[in-house]
Length: 73
Image (tube, rainbow, N blue to C red; front, side):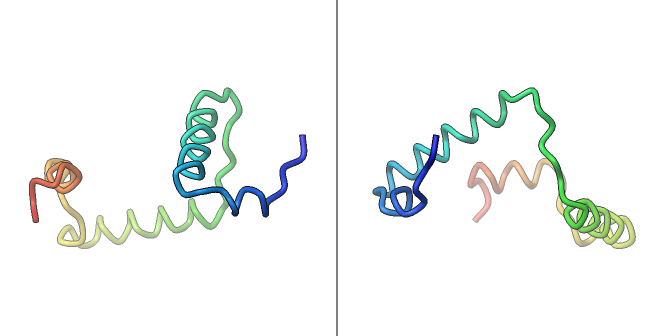
């Protein structure tokens, strides 16, 4: 199957979002391992190490969920 990127870019926003949703669901059901580039692992490690050195840089799990659920302005 060949997909023309220009056709995808021409789709209305609602159809683009639906396509993204379908692809995301499909990726989640895949048995294949999704490769993570080295730079992503390095950045995640850097941020973790920075937060371990300075606990004021992060927020608690509870605070994160409050923000996600819009309980905090």
